[in-house]
Length: 278
Image (cartoon, rainbow, N blue to C red; front, side, top):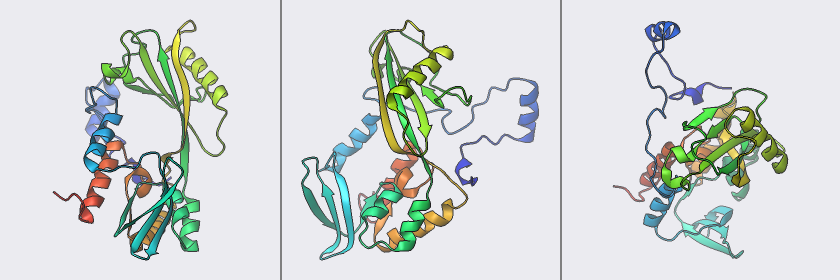
């Protein structure tokens, strides 16, 4: 892997701090998430919903199927609405948060060099297992990491500790993340291993009553900064720039961006083309 992705994420203590930390507990917060704000109601989706309310017309549950940079009136985007009907819109430019491999697929007459660069990009997929437990305070933590190989999951978070508004009173919410690459694991088997792992880790009990237990699959979750990352993204971004497609967000920039930085990415791109400036 390349080292670009660790900027601002991996703590960089001074030599003096490392020496003191080796001999005693040092009360110092590290990392970008040492302090953060979270919506009181509506979960983290409240931020996206608030922004969408100021945008105007938003076509939800729609799929972009083609970007033609040389349409009759300029940039033309064809998308399939939730009703299954294809529609086209004309514009001077496009902001795209689509994963780079997917946006390249729908650019009309994309150069072969760009297609091949998109096929070399590496990412991890993710299964999110959402669990509602009929017991309060299964943990007092915000999130925990599990590097041990005996656990199928790598991170577990507890939304009820972000805000009481995320979970019914007297209950606990658990979000379990299982990453994979390539073929998707069986969801039922994954759920079984997740529950067994949570019991072994002391988070759940065998007799816990579970109100919610669902698994959601996401093809694109974590961008992998391999050694060819910069070269491949540069090839694709150069092509998109020439065709007035501005990549934004984690999967458009193809970088390890958190939600706050992804939102700023879109804001900065919109201001660059003169939309919503000021």
